[in-house]
Image 1 (cartoon, each protein chain N blue to C red):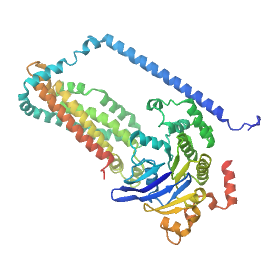
Image 2: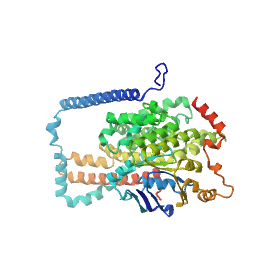
Image 3: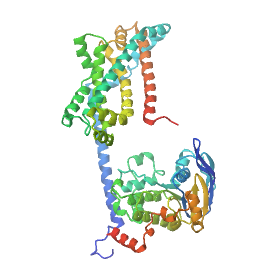
Image 4: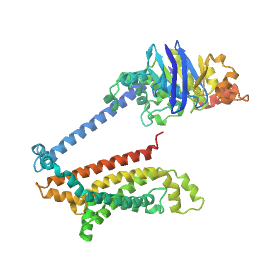
Length: 290
Length: 273
């Protein structure tokens, strides 16, 4: 190695200095990126605050005023609360029902769409982009817009809300399902194809058993999200708890006790389903603990 | 300096390690042999405190390490490095970063999250890599290396910890015979040159015989043999592996010596080309 004419392996100190130079370059780029990011965040906040009608800092201390009004009035009329909760319980059932039915329909549509748009599984591989864009569209249009259009056409009630949420669910779940299906093992599918099975048989018997736990877990997560969505759609006249909440809040002071009762119901339901489904999802993904 | 007293590990109603006891009075190279499922890995993981023992105690320099918690436990883990069968490196990070992970216990969490290490540590990491003959691989991603090279990176990470003891859990089980020899030679050299204690789980008898000063045989969670390699007769080996009369040592061998030596030289020359 002392012979200069021989090109032996590089010496340790050259490796060290070249690696250190590389590290310093990486740190420099990292630091610059961080600085630019911080600068953009700060300037973006200034712009947004400047365009805000009231001003962020001026309005900040008022943020608790409305909840304080609602809470103080509800506290004065706390004796009525149980009766009001009973009164609004049917509306809650309606809200949860909308969420459940739309999750079910949305998940079924999402399942078909996902299989049709997964490379390696698709029935018509050339149409994959078409189905993908279709799902993009379904996800991109806000539920509330679809619901408003449908309410205009079909009239108010739970059906437009259900259709609106189902369309969004199909798009959202379809994408997640298709990502799971991409990682599925294709050997069982090949095995089934060798026996002369149809596409539907290959998917149902070869892919579904592999992906079912993941699919169920995503569908449960979507169900939680849909309960919130279905409550919000009530605001635009789709019935259920949201409709009652809008009425109670629009009347202003005097009916805040009803608003509080509805908040309690909504909060309780979301916590309940959140707990239930997270427990169920854990069981599905991790299996039973011994 | 190192002592196990009735160390036991239970999984449900199954006993994985049953009252294991032994004393090590000076740094040496110890091989633990036995077939898979004999409790070798469980024992090693308890020494490193990756898993907790059900009962019994482990003493190092008079200190009971079985009940260490939090920072004290992590400090013990940094003094007792571990090498795994599947190398357990971070595949997408470069080799030097992987070696620098050996200093994690000494550095602040925030600095290490941004991959900020002192230049002196970086120099030392590359020196260790050079000692193991893989300094040229320093800037590459760990996943781009061959199995034998990855295992040497793992050894470098262990050395970076500057540990009192190195535990190796089947370090050569996923390597071909050539690489297995390189890795075992490296472990032996570390023991001889640095005076560090090395405890290695091995599933082949001849590796244990060739590299270790002391052999511990385990069968069904119990220690059934503890002595010098030359005390290990074929009869005892049969007991350890639970084999019948047809058992021969060559059946567990993966070493190149199992081929005749001329053949071995030819293979070695070919491998180096």
